[in-house]
Length: 198
Image 1 (cartoon, rainbow, N blue to C red):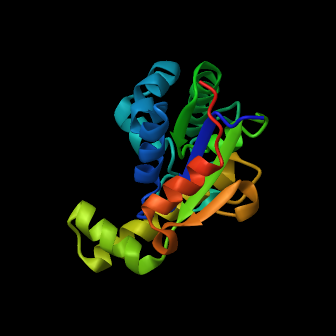
Image 2 (image 1 turned 90 degrees about the horizontal axis):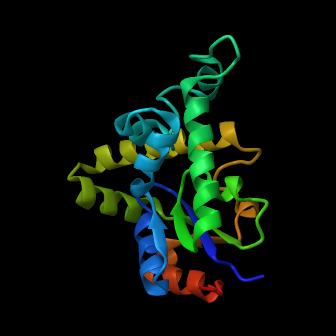
Image 3 (image 1 turned 180 degrees about the vertical axis):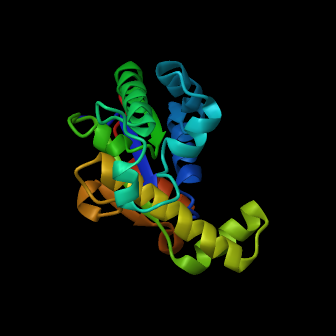
């Protein structure tokens, strides 16, 4: 079956979002990253600011604190409601049009579809540090902290809401090291694996 939806999970600083945007431009298909926030806000009733900070990342605490914090009598937390709204939006987008979806556990949410190509982009720490220093105007130590904190929060969120482990190759169709391959080759390899039917 043709792959019409591409999900891209990524390590912070690996360039996964940039690569995904380039793939979407090349194919002329929709691209969803931060621009999905307003739709999730409408579904959940939560503020866009809260969604931006929490929809893909766990709170700044460990897995067990995440699992048990802020739950009401039904056992649901605000984060659970946010995840359900995000899930619903992603399922609706996948029904509507060919697209590239960045992060947000989209690979797991769409796991029952045959028309999805799941990609994980990772990189070597020295290259990620250089990229983050440049993008965020931080020191090398600041970049290392940002990378570790962001990836830890992504991992906690993903592991909590899916039956999988974040970054494990078997969860994805392709796992690409952007430091070794370069962004252009990553883009080409993804495109070579896709047969978009528009």
